[in-house]
Image 1 (cartoon, rainbow, N blue to C red):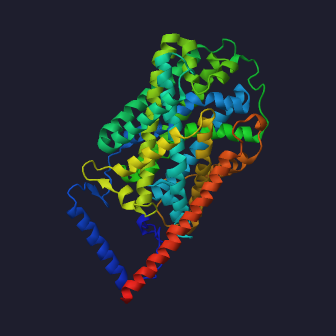
Image 2 (image 1 turned 45 degrees about the vertical axis):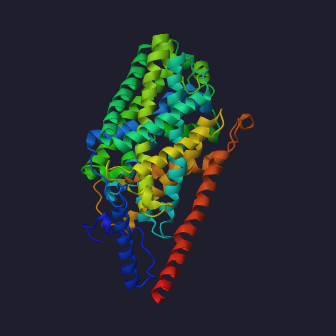
Length: 521
């Protein structure tokens, strides 16, 4: 493979050459004729099955999507959960720093993948290129996991937190409102995001940019307030910031899941490379720049939380720690009315960016025939030039996860369940990157990640896949057994492999024999 080799030269889905040339040509002709007749015969039809998406994203809009996808409910809601896991102020800050370093390493690896294989769909494209055998197995399983578990669980958690902070602003009470009121608002928020991306895509992109500015300014306000309160009793009200630090590995896995959940989103543009202007330059600049700025704000924000609130207050604040922070620092009007609205807007922006990215995975999977009724989910609206049906499917799945989980530990459980498959495929994608440096030496690499960076990413993925099975110190007091999240992830991946065999192997054989019979007739 010479240096001019492009991504399009790689056979991602090599079909078994069982059909004769004539039968393939006849099949292709009949399919094309059927598609054209369908469009011509239906006056209400306004979708184009194979239309490309418009390249409308530049550097700043791309950076806005990355920062908007990262900054969501995590930084405003998980600090109390992380403190409860690791046990001390100092270790809480340390895990946020670790999360930043590992995320930057992962981002660098994904930038090499995204510029080397400039096609939408993210890990789907990377896994299929790196591991072509068994045919499309990893791409298929990744798509199912992302569509049915990883994306909708995280976005459901963000949507519910949006409702929580809006109700906080309305009632002035951080925890006394109805769980179902939070969920109802969450359903409405995701519906609005899907509608905007479907019907007014350019307005949605501008809104994401505006909300990203709001989120960055809000985090900057957290940092400034914290700096003004430094030295008034020590961080977390303790002179020894590492007092009470946990020694259980599972506690750190749980904490890191939540930290990485807060940092997740830096790969958002990898799912929309088809919509980037000059992707080989825009992708790494927007993703690495957005993540670096966000990581700095995250670490300083956690220091600020502990500068204002003591350990007991943060532990009791649940998912509204930022609201409690501003109430104490700036008073009831700011803390209970103004800032909760800003935080709700911040998490709303995160949901908007997430719905955008998740719908692109549905779109890419459908276009490769991985989903039932793939012609529908993989279509582009002729009127709006957007994947309307993929956005609708994304909203429906998020709604399921908002409504079905029982109250209580549902937020933390959603994060853990959605996070496990993510780490499996993230690790495999970086392993695939390393593998392709040998198998696809001539493939152009506009961006190249340093090998130790790839090693860190793979090691982090292995840690996050293994340690959740280690029994935590407080296992007996947990309402939901510690093993539920990782076991659910493993079972889902195994079941997806079974579905792959049915759809990509058995059904292909049925189609093959059907075509042979038709040829004989």
